Amino acid sequence: MSNLIDELYEFPCAYVIKAIGEDDGGLEDLVRGIISGRLEPLADVQIQTRPSSTGRYSTISASFQADSRQQLEDMYGE
View 1 (cartoon, rainbow, N blue to C red):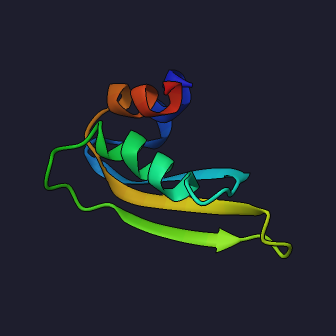
View 2: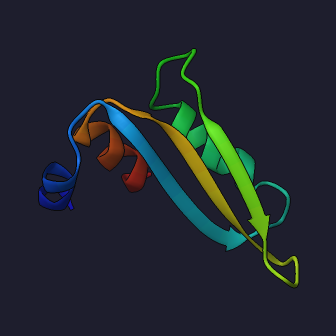
């Protein structure tokens, strides 16, 4: 993953992570916690949630300022 990230992005940069999962009411909080734990305390994170047609699953899109490849790898690894 690191070679592709290095080729596509110049840090710092705007970045979006998407997560898809069964939504038991805690998916957004889980994604927000993983991302916020790797960012500065006052970092701006924009979260958008889109439920599936049945409401069982959700797609979470989180937009934020990424500072480094390592920061992204840490988020994906968690």
